[in-house]
Length: 122
Image (cartoon, rainbow, N blue to C red; front, side):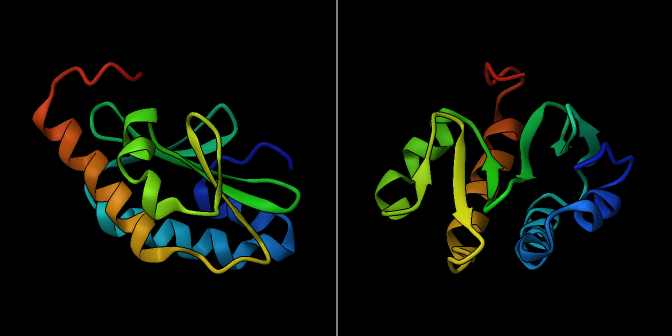
């Protein structure tokens, strides 16, 4: 993918198979943090308010939601069989989007950032 200046351009430049997931993911995150600043940082869409809330990205066969290790660990049991790394929840283009889970992770991050001036992440 080439570097994009906006989130809409980022989604348009993503693999065709991933665009529906990206559009839905963006809508969920936007709904969870309507007042957050949106930006492209390090080539991926970010939401900040005023600190890092979350970001997302497109890959060859999956989308990733970047939260924090704490946020992902909090929802570990609900994540179930979805692949994760320390900072990322990965959803394959051939998998259903876990919308409720993503919404709750995002809302959790918004709440954590609102309650703590320094949450120790970016």
